[in-house]
Structure formats: C-alpha cells, structure tokens
Amino acid sequence: MIFKDKVVALLNQGLSEKPSVFLIDLTITDAMKIIVTLDGDQGVTLQDCIDINRAIENNLDREEQDFSIEVASAGVSTPLKLVRQYKKNIGRTLKVKTATDVIEAVLADANEEFITLTWTAREPKKIGKGKETVEKKIELPYSEIKEAIVTITF
Image (cartoon, rainbow, N blue to C red; front, side, top):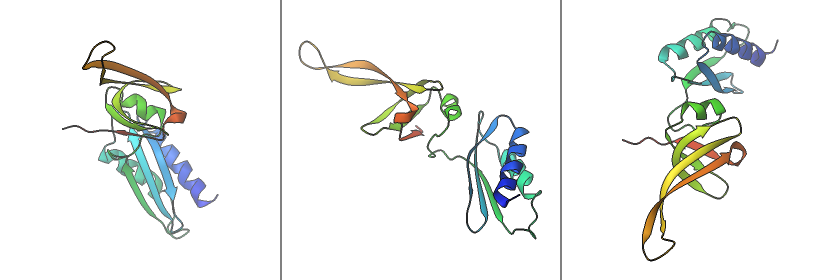
C-alpha cells in the first residue's frame, strides 16, 4: 500500500468516528508533509484536530516513511467548496464571485444543485425621479460560482 493510500484510509477511519466533522482538503507534498483541512457542521474544535492528527500519526511508521503532519480547521477566509458548507452557512452573508459579477448577499437556501441569494438594492424608480429599495433574489448553480467566502461583520 502506498503512503497516500495509507493516509487516506486512516483519515477516513478517524472521520468516521466524528460524523459532524468532514474533510475539505488533503494535501501530501513531495517533502511528505501531510496537510489536512477540516470543517464541521457545528465548527471544528481543537480536540477534533488533535483526534484526527492522532488517528493518522499514531498509525504510520516514521522509520518506513518520514513525514510531518498538520491538521487544521478551514479558516474564516477559506472559500466554500462543498454543498455541506453552504448548507451550514444559510443565513450568513457571502461574497460570491462568478465569471461576470461579485455579489454580496445573504445565503437564503442551498440544495444539491444551486444556492439562493437575497439582498436589497437601490434602483431608479420605474415612474418618476429618485431611487427605491428593491428586494433582489437569485438562484445560482454551483457550476457558475468561482469563489464564495463568508463575510464577517462586527
């Protein structure tokens, strides 16, 4: 069994014991540095990272293959990748980049095919002068999303 296959098997075993935590990214560099990025339905605790680290590190032999390991949670500015992440962030404000636009809006809904964004905009009145506030809504397929990041407001 090659090194990466062993790491993937151990990672999957560790994640199976923590159903609310899921994998965002796994990278193994040429220098044998294992980088695991996690997210969770209720966030990721330090203990979650420690448990996944141990599930991998304690079951690999450093004499067979020297390696280093880093297990971390997806940061605040990490783009959303999985449908599960979108569902977890319903009700929060996202900054979504498409091929033609950048939309900052509230994530109203997410399903397997698309997300629904809502926001208010000031647009010229249809009759008369001035502007009016208009509620906007768009259903955006995942295939059109280049990047989506949760925005934090203080």
